Image (spheres, rainbow, N blue to C red):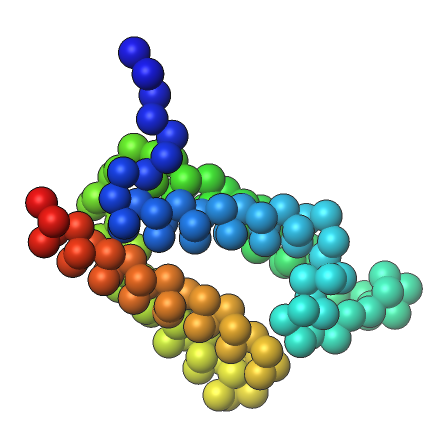
Length: 138
């Protein structure tokens, strides 16, 4: 019995690409937290400069671990062509686009954080369109 690792559909590929990117970004956040914070437009401080009770690094580590795990979940879903999961991700990634964009609009997050919102939105639209394409091909 052979195990197929590569996706068999366009939607599966969109999920696999998103999963690989999420896993890589998660790993980067665990290994190089300052680089990730800076790339998103957040101010980076040395540990000595942080106020007592500043848990930015802890939150980043938790978010990075969640991103790494989520990336692996997406990769498994892509490898198994778990279509219900593909469909489930579209509205929730659009919700993430809305929430992250709102954080920028409300000046809670820096403008560069909009890139994360757009990454989610573009991925959701790509997966949605790929699901439609795959359904028409079948």
